Image 1 (cartoon, one colour):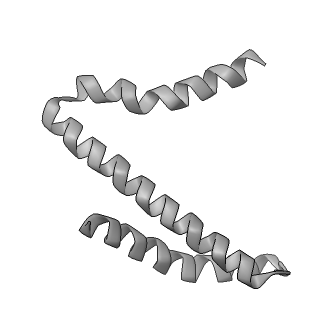
Image 2: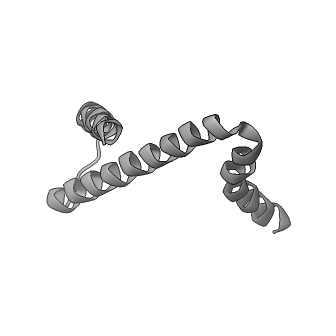
Length: 87
């Protein structure tokens, strides 16, 4: 639970600095700031939860051995690469 809080805090702090700077530097105009803020918060929550879950899986796999966990993490990316190579 602490690591999820840390990840969310770090993503929130980075988002508060990077997103407004990017918007200002690129000269974007946000038509619906409420929707944009909701999307940023929801995306941050999802990214924070996902990174926490992957970190927990890696910590558990380290105790069991990397032989089991390597294919588990590489399977989704390998299947995506295979699909795009076939087209």
